[in-house]
Amino acid sequence: MSRMTVNERPIEFLMDPETPLLWALRDAANLTGTKYGCGNGDCGACVVHIDGEPLRSCLVTIAEAEGRFITTVEGLSGSRAHPVQQALVAEQAIQCGFCTSGIVMAAAALIERNPGASEEEIKAAIPNICRCGVYPRLVRAIQRAGRVARRQERISAAPAPGISAEDAAVEVPALSAPDQDAQRGSPD
Image 1 (tube, one colour):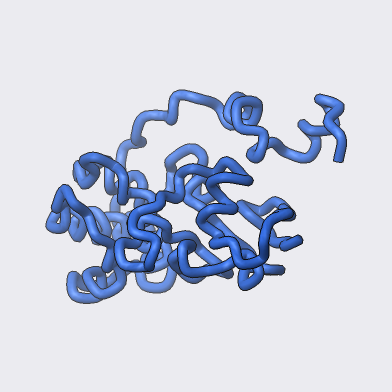
Image 2 (cartoon, rainbow, N blue to C red; image 1 turned 90 degrees about the horizontal axis):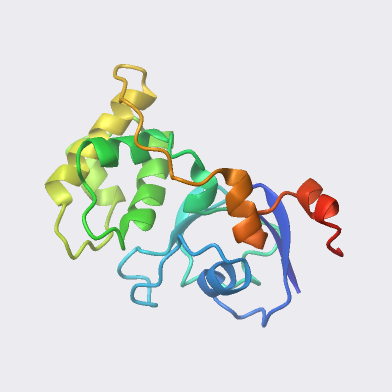
């Protein structure tokens, strides 16, 4: 049994402690924004924040994540209001979208610690593999997100996700708030 905080909610995984965090998040918590790409830490599609650091969840077991704070792309900003999310849309730096959540998480960590990152620093901090090859737009988007984070620029809001957080919690029980569980009468 592994306990941790995922997207600001306590969670307990009743799984083999050697299970990669990626699979616990996707299969047990139904947080499918974190993607499986290569399974060996090369592609970056599975990046999540663990105690604020961007790490590849395919390489971290749930035993290693015990007691830690995990943030997935779903927990970054349900309204897509994070500067990185806004800038990726504004710069059209998303194509197929498969690698996007890992890139968003890596870029969000970079912007948090260095919103004025240079092109070289961005390339070093975002080693994610994107088959669509959006790299030039990606660098521009992350630079723009940094300007937004520094309050030097504003971006018109990206479209709303099309589903409210409350409706998503009904559809995806792992996202429900504890008080919603009590209202539905679900057992603890």
